[in-house]
Image (cartoon, rainbow, N blue to C red; front, side, top):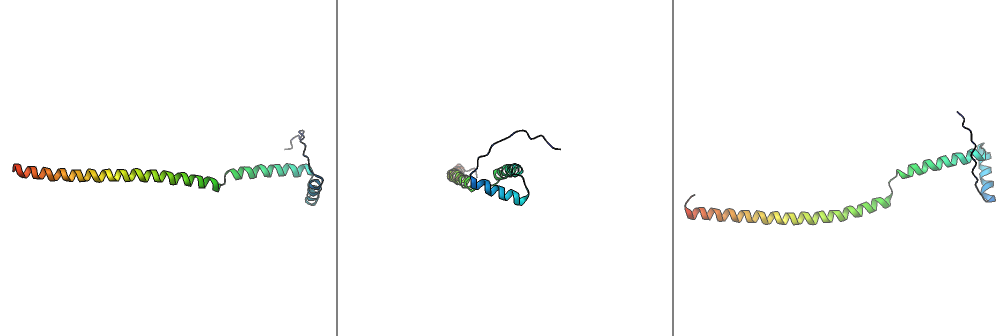
Length: 108
């Protein structure tokens, strides 16, 4: 289905750019209009595909944030581990004291 192409845009080129494009389009059997239309379409496709690519800058930034977050988690984990060790020690002491108390009372 052919659509009516009635919207015109202007493109300013240097003399060298125009000659280079005309030579290219003549060798490919394209009109200048078809070439520009296809070039715009290809450029839009490249932009769409580029947006789906992984950008190394983002990976580096996320990696830094992840590293920082892991340090915080490690600190909290170490604090929790220390608290659990202290709690375990206190429970053991309580168990020992309860055992001695019960021995003194003669209930064991």
